[in-house]
Amino acid sequence: MSVPTVQSDVTIIGAGPVGLYLAGLLGKMEFSVTVLEKKTSIDRHSKSLGIHPVSLELFDEVGISEQFTRAGLAIKKGHAFIDDRKIGTVSFDTCPKPFNYILALPQYQTEEILEAWCKTIDHVTIHRGAALTLISEESEHVDISYSIGGSNETIRSNYLVGCDGKNSTARELAGIHFQGNSYPDTYIMGDYSDNTDFGPDAAVYLHKEGLIESFPLPDSNRRWVVKTEDYIENPTREMLDNLVLERLGHHLSGQDNVMISSFGVQHHLADKLSSGRVLLAGDSAHVVSPIGGQGMNLGWITASNLAKSLTAIRDKKGHTKAILDSFSKTSRSTAKTVATRAEINMWLGRKRRYPAIRNLIARVIVNTPLQRKMARMFTMRGL
Image (tube, rainbow, N blue to C red; front, side):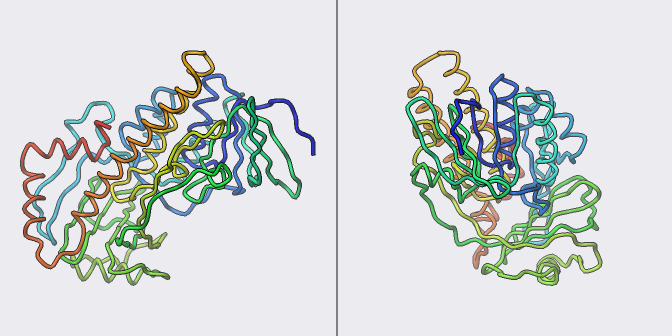
């Protein structure tokens, strides 16, 4: 195993939605980029769903927004219910155009679009089946050791960026502390063929027994997310069918089902997003509650800011440490704001013995000018 001269400006660990977007963005900015991903193929398990206007604007800047809007489904409004009684509607029509909606698209399709885009960029190389094993940082470069196809390899880069998720190997090897804990909230979710009358609209039920969310998907499907008392280790569709039937009187039992899963909720934030030549973005840097669907979009915002920072360093527009410290500080502040917004969403959806105050707050939000503020919050404006 030989250690080469610098052969990649930036090496990115992780080919999820954030790592792929960052790779493509840096490649368009004339950086040479190598992506190392331990998975051999894109995971088709349904995970993140919503692409927010701020992200569509970022995609538009590099000419790929149309690929997303063609594949996804535009959600322009969400109906609010208390138990099964409708109390109002939050519309995104008043949000800035042209992306005055949230785009629903399963994460694996998002990753497929981003990976295909990266493959059109000469400066980007993606290695799948490559697992990070060691980082050796020097003053002028960082050596990244990884295993692939039964052999050990090393690549020398100017910078390494960890985009390898909440259990980031890159972050651990860099010795960056990851603070946070778990919320008490747990959920079960599933994707079904749609048998509601909502069409392209979302629905949120603030039920006395716990939140139910119902989001449209492309191809006439719909995702249901239901608050549970405890984490369900081995969820079944019958569990979800019964919870929706018991709380809403809505039958899912006759519908096609392609996915059932359960999840808990965590919040974590790295102490810093820059340590020498090792940088962080996405879930490696910050984890927020998925209720509200803003975590993946937060990762793209961080990646965009990081790309601008690396460009400023290359173009000698300031001292390297000052630029990266500013990136870290700004990104951590944005992550805290997004985490707070997600906590508000969870608070509204928790089971209550006496829900009168919560219900009053919800009615005021959707039936007064506060609705516009809520629409801005849901679409990640004002960060």
